[in-house]
Image: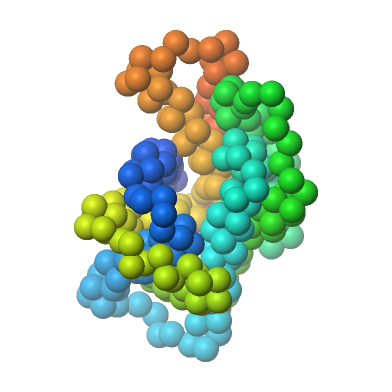
Length: 303
């Protein structure tokens, strides 16, 4: 079987960060009148269906009841995160949710300490804190007069952040046990399929499914784009890297997405860099470089 090297996994995660950054611009093209949870469910479903032919051709290890339950748990974590994000955005700003998300890699490191004991965890704490501080400066650069998020939004999105932080280390733990031998293709397909089903169930109870009638051809195009590049490709790259790179480092690549968005504004939109942005960009770069160096794992995984 083909294996993924440490260098290849990190290059893949650089591409992951770029795709995540680009997804924010593409997502803005979809009609805002359609329920966002329904849109996310459709994205996950389209992505899973795109992976189905590859799954059938590539083959996979036999599915067991424990394996299905494991995929369902991981899919539920995805659904909880996206559901909490869109619920929180009804009561607070994207800046506040972005600020909270900088804590996700740090929480993931804590979960990793319990699920995947490793003596080198302490080596990653300081680099992660540096990268998080840099991302925080980049996110807060446009903050106005100090809008405070509601307690409800904090609690709801806090649950979602815990779910996302739990996702990467739990994926690696399950791949060592009930999902042993499961490759990135199968992991991506089943997790997204279950995630979409949980989101659709939520839409049935919330009534969000009714907004599906407002989908236009342009919305379907952007949904397919997001499903292919911002969901399918990113989840495959994520699971390809988990097991080669420490799980908490994998999710920390989101800090580079924040940096790439800032660089886009500097070089493409010709915006003048602010001192806070320059400091934040340097901190993200330094922190991520040190984090990657301290996160090498000895075991490669199959592609």
